[in-house]
Length: 368
Image (cartoon, rainbow, N blue to C red; front, side, top):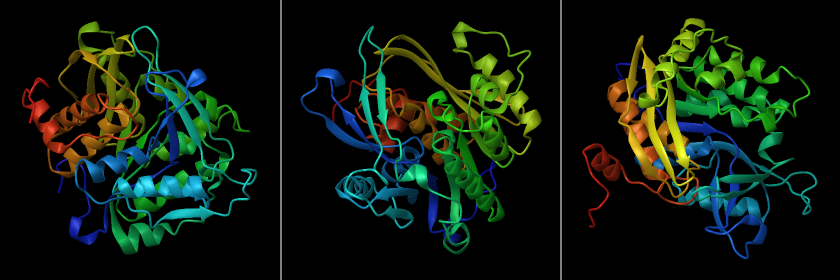
């Protein structure tokens, strides 16, 4: 049992982690621009799914995804990529597709990695996706969390923001996880372009507040707490260039925990970009009234920043599930994120041994 979290015993559960979220196809033009590309690499990815995939592929645990896909070639491609990632697919909802994408479709994400003074850039084409049409009551949560058993459940603000119905599904899932004693993590991951489409202008705060009270591990920073939860950070903490804002994060995390005392860990990545290809990188976690910070990687060389935050979450979660301390967990998460950003695509291509070597002082120059 973790000293920080009350995790269900592994032998009582079919799954170590289950993620709820949309899985899209990412079209990557490599070093080119989307506007003049002649070919694309195709990856699967999604803010919530990436965490479960890394738990399965990088850390060797039992991961599964809850999502919806169209019953057509693009949906089958996404399903095949999910299978290659070692993620359980028994809780995927399949939607009949009309062949034109009018009734349902698969979300697409065109992403440029950026380089030097040219920042990374994303162009989403995801309206009316199968996942965005998920509704409460479609997933048998009591079967998943009760009969099958799940140690850790992860979802986030991207899925909750897809539509009014996915927000309800997210709340429904979190409440079910709580009933069955499953640890819940939530990544605020605020996207104004998604929340602004809701008919209720206060949807972001209403939904996120409903979820925040049931969360054990919250991923977010001061900006997210203010925007998504309406927390007034009157004293956000002094900005400190040397610690990449860890002091300000601690003040924000303490304010969050005062309002939502159930949370055992509040964590965030810390990043200061000098160019798209070089960032100062670290992470911090607040737990039990104490701030824990990861090592700082100054001028970290980055190939593809997308998925770095999700890799941080999976490393943090794996370490906490492995009875490591919060200080060790935030270091594992930050190291995983640092390595994941050296490869293309949303999903991590990193091994656990590589993370351990980096934490042990590896300089990235050894060849085996």
